[in-house]
Length: 112
Ligand code: SF4
Ligand code: SF4
Image 1 (tube, rainbow, N blue to C red):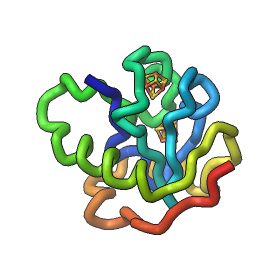
Image 2 (image 1 turned 90 degrees about the vertical axis):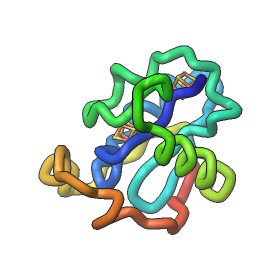
Image 3 (image 1 turned 135 degrees about the horizontal axis):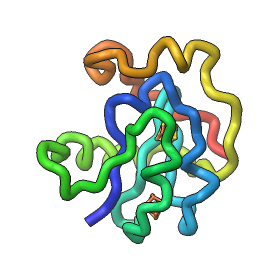
Image 4 (image 1 turned 45 degrees about the vertical axis):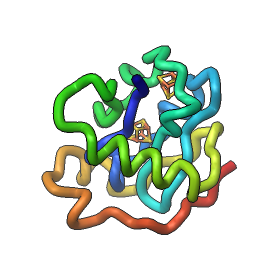
């Protein structure tokens, strides 16, 4: 089992999650973060920290595509352990439907 980052992180990217992770397993894309499923120790402390409620345990149904996306991009994007400011329009983007199709970027973020 692992935790995964899902749709509502895209363009919200508040980054409250990264500083609580005891094993530093968050990786940064241009407009979302992912969790490396082989590094996550399933402690669950990040889940309630996410203001966008984007972090879920992979035991919830229908998260297969998100598990794959997290696993794929965790090996391509840089590690992130220190919080920076969220995007200026993060609040406006919170809860918007279909962000994966509309806004997902494969580009890496800047990392630490
Ligand atoms: S706290 Fe939530 S919205 Fe913010 S970067 Fe982490 S997963 Fe994404
Ligand atoms: S569940 Fe724990 S180990 Fe996994 S990403 Fe969240 S804080 Fe890190």
